[in-house]
Length: 559
Image 1 (cartoon, rainbow, N blue to C red):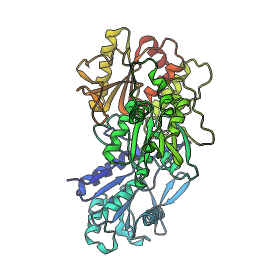
Image 2 (cartoon, rainbow, N blue to C red):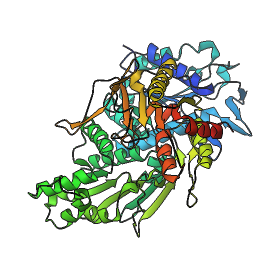
Image 3 (cartoon, one colour):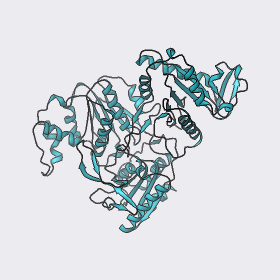
Image 4 (cartoon, rainbow, N blue to C red):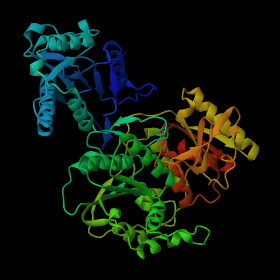
């Protein structure tokens, strides 16, 4: 059996440049090390910040059965040896690779000691597959820990040799504790995506990302409002907060607007065993509170949803509805009148985290006033490839706004992504056939059907696409409107997920087909909906639109 890898989701789409080399080494280590080893890799660490690429220093950490952690710094290309030290020229800067290794290893050990008893034995290894060290004996470090071009295929063998000959008393005896530490240190958290019901996908949050910022904040009372663009990591931050509170044995309420998103989060919570976390969308929360108080909700009554908050405020509630931490996701969709309901769920020391993206406000609601709260803003989009973000910035010019709508989004994903594709229709028949062709195009790129999401710009009631059981040879996986005993959505048996843009908020897929694009006014509401749809795509975006609409969008992208 091969070695275990974290994060486990290594895209089958080829990465460019240094990332492709790193992935090749990762696959080599995975194949050559047995399953008693675990590899933690940093392929996803790099990001773009203010035009500069920021990366973690060490590409791989390997945990051996002895409890030794091997920190592997990989450098490609040419280098030189200066007074026994290997130096890599990075633009105007010179990097001493031995210093970089020593600093990172010492930092890992220091952080481990703060959380666990005992020391973490870290063995630094420098891997330079393109460079031959001219005089290994003249290095200022142990030459056996330097793997150069002459021995580039022996990296895994070196690790196993050290492990076999190691003095086990000098390493930590609890690999499980080390694994837990490394997962926390690398911030490996489940991502809420299109495949969250099929498997838990692990991603590495980027250094200096949203979670790091929040984890470093310390103020009382903790009331933090995070305004972040699509793909900035808000839902991941929410889940990280649930994990944190679970470790502290604190009771947490997670509440969002969208029922599908709450279903995804609830399933993630169950799979992770996060006891003490309660997950609802807002209206389901009100319903449960009222039923808990012995009151029934008459959903046949006109305007019932608008009165739920008032009914809760007029009802005595049990103290079990008071929580130590409250996480509000999709805050841009909340009404000001809902805030008192949530405040009834808090005590004086409750920790609050409010997450929102004003651009994704599809219901034209004014922002909720939160006086006295600390605010954090991030425009960094880590989810979408640069092509998608650039296309959004270009097509915005085609829309008419009553007042300026700042599109505060920066491409932070190092991937270019695949070129956008366009399919045009003129009537209902061609809409169905062109959407089927768009799905086929995704398959042609190598995406499997479970990696594709078809998103309609219309709601379930009006959509022609969502009324179909299949499109050409592709059967569609629809939400049936029913939920199982765990509160999870029940879907039809199709193999390509089809959903409305409204219900797919907070989720993502590797390949996204946006269909039923037909704008008559190109107004602000149209743009907000298109923004949500386009930012669901991780690698490939395909637009299926009416001829008039698609021509304007295509012209804007390729202007």
